[in-house]
Each structure stands twice: as C-alpha cells, then as structure tokens.
Image (cartoon, rainbow, N blue to C red; front, side, top):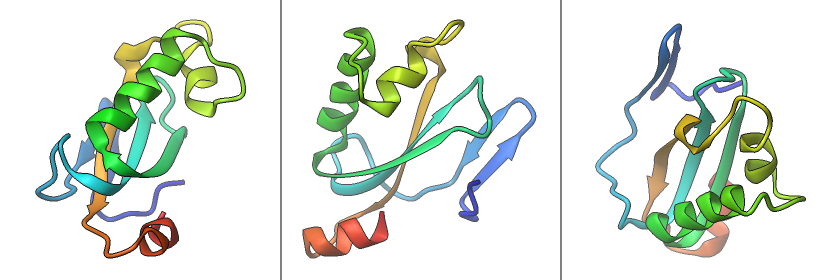
Length: 103
C-alpha cells in the first residue's frame, strides 16, 4: 500500500505531487502504477536518466519479457502500456547506496 503523502489514490486515477523532476533527471527513485489496478505499484531506482530506464520498462512490456514484474503485469488480459503511469519520487542522491536505501 502506498503511504507517501505526495501520492493520492483517487477513484478515477492517481494524483501525484512529486517535485521538480523530469524524464532527463538521473540518479532517481521512481514509482510505476497501473491505471487498472489501484493496489499495484512498483518502486525502482536507477543511476541513468529516468527516460532511459522507463524506455527499458516499456521495451520489456512490448517483448513480453518473462521474469520481470512490470512486463508480466502489463501483459495480462485487458492491460497495455496505456495503463502504465509513473512518478519520479526522489533524485540527486550523492551515492548509489543512498539511492538504493531510499528505494
């Protein structure tokens, strides 16, 4: 269950208030959500730009990669990439250890 005060689950979607980050931000902790499944969330971290990491997630969905939670979820019946939403939660960590701890 999501308990971050910047994320509000609404009956018709998700309201995110996460900060001044963009797809070009790197060294981030991010959240992926499913529009169809309000109780499904995935938190990840990356040292690369979020854009590159998110594109990797989308490619894994398109390729129906087994063993990857995001790909497996968005390849179930009645799901598609259109249901995949994201938010960058934190960025600018001084070390990879700090980023991983925050994740």
